[in-house]
Length: 161
Image (cartoon, rainbow, N blue to C red; front, side, top):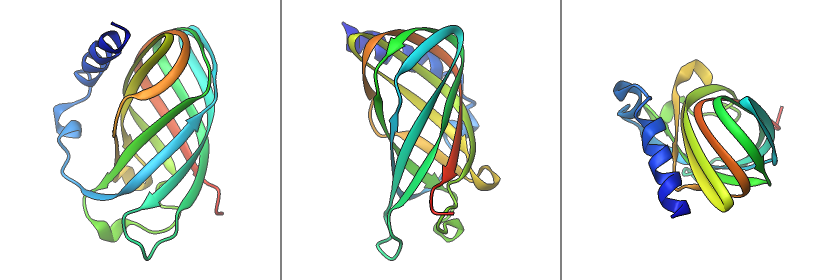
């Protein structure tokens, strides 16, 4: 039941993303995995810190640490513990990637629900010149009591600089 609710909420939020953005062609650059701090949803917004690690598909590049903030706007009610989220990183071509290139601001649709154990997903577009798409690899896993649907702003900064 809980997974069904989270899946339905994601479908609703994903429908809010422009079809052109959601269908943006891309080359797989690697996987971005983030640990997002727990926190309290303040009805119409929330802000949570995160630490991320990017694992490039191209073995000539080393894994990179990132940090940032996730801001959500819309309905966000409840409390969650730390959350783990993984994204497939896509770009129009592989030659635009360089260390630190994922740093930037992202925006997209999000949905999540928890009643004890729950999940959610965020489809985000942004980064350097808005060249990157962060596509959820799977539903995020989280614990708490929370309902959130709306727009997510994701500020990602390189820890290497």
